[in-house]
Image 1 (tube, rainbow, N blue to C red):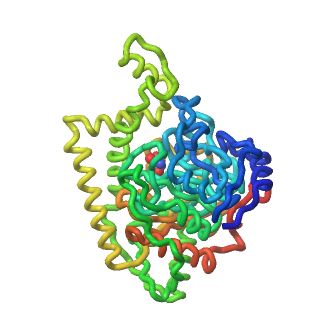
Image 2: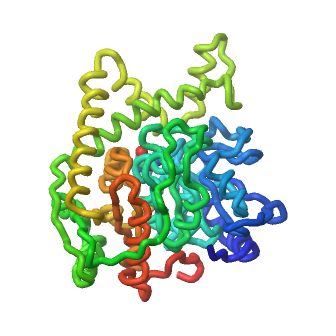
Image 3: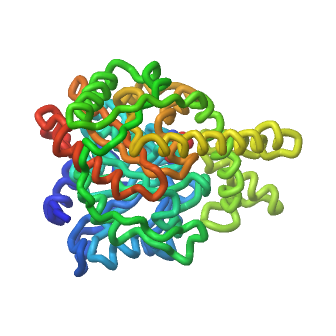
Length: 453
Ligand code: GLN
């Protein structure tokens, strides 16, 4: 895998991080030693909810401000064993809840293409660092789209593997049945090389699976059936539509069969996701009790200490989600909310399995529009709608990748490809084909440095 070199990367960090606020902690250049192996010298930025022993693990929260990780996540361990270097910890929405990095307790991150705009979230620091060439690749986490949405807003690749392919050991849990570590890069081929060392069964994660094949098989569009979802056409805005239409046209001209699919449940995905994700979050975040993990506001007993600590240091969005999650799990409402959402999740899974009986890949936009202005952030519920196109892959566990496709008003537009479970290799083949044959290189420079735009 090609690296920009440690010197250039640290020069970029020095030049841009103050303005962009992508890194929350930077490993000093002298300590960032390259090892030997297939990823020798590759500089990796790590989202601040993934543990690296000796480095901070704030999860974007005040509650973990002084917490230092005592061990290293499996994925990071494998990358470092292959010669990669960790350059630092990247900004994020608190506990990965958000779509704009504005819910970070450490200030939001700016989009390198236009600092007045959001890089997306919750892996906004990861996407901005890759786009501004402040690392070769970054790790993020994707529960409902948090790798793919910011990748799309920053004009880079964002890949969420098949659930279980990358170990979650060392990733701070948000919603365990949806969470996956994901990878953000400027080139699709880099993802393959990172997956070749990072993927594979890990005995420390009970949901981990054997790695599917990542070897390049070559991509022949003439042999491909590409699904497009009819209901989505009403949901994309004019900034995205032309790139989507052009991509369909390009695939058609190259011989692909385009097959329209109907996804009548599409408008349930946000509610199903919010019920399941908040329910799981309310359980996962109960470990932050003011007794373990640093920050403590002393009360007269355990209950009060916990209430004081959580009340003082959790931000408003995290509190909202915990309250909602606790409520949907409560005895009176469990059947009508949590159980119902779990059933609809199965219906959605069956629908997507049915899709992959008819097509090889599904093409959709990654996001409905382009990066919005930081000053014009939509309200809480409108922000939840950001994830309309990305959530199905989390609910079903299927692999999906956001690919940079074009620009609109000098801002990146992303599309998304989804494949059936464990067809990650083919998904990456398709992304590479699009990279070579479709992406308009005259209008989009993969990985912009913000001083050159
Ligand atoms: N934007 C979504 C949310 O706020 C997704 C978050 C994620 O994928 N971590 O929940």
